[in-house]
Image (cartoon, rainbow, N blue to C red; front, top):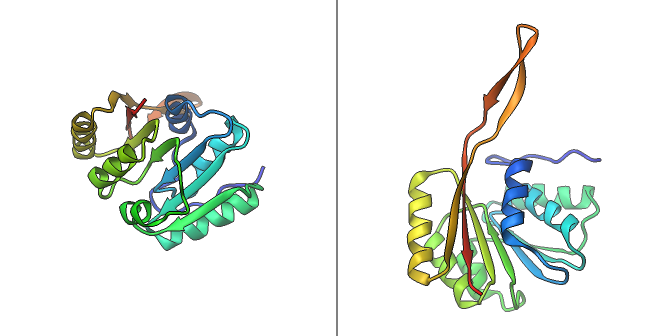
Length: 183
């Protein structure tokens, strides 16, 4: 397996990806958008779960788009459309995207407008990952206003590390996973 190239703020940890994707409930033949795709790790894992997955990976940072493109190429992931720019502008202006079934949001800039657009587009399920409590509160409030809020999870992972010939657990930063359903 080829290593994943990195970019600041990522990649999302495998355990967080697993929980996030389980909450999305992707189905064969669906369309998935990865907003704030960073390294592309969420898209790469999503592609392993279902057949005929159509992926859009979007990020405002050109560095992230370059890293994601290289990671997709290194891992043989060909059916991905990379989009560079601010999510709400891309979602409003890009008529090539069409129907979106599921959305993962790892970047939370302009979360209100992004959620409103995804709700208007009748995206079935939306999962937002956040590390800042203010973002969590903002996201929950907007999802409640839109009538799509389903649940929020606080996920903390600790990894074993050696200490004095034995093992201790070192915690990683916790992540909040906010789930919206529009079905």
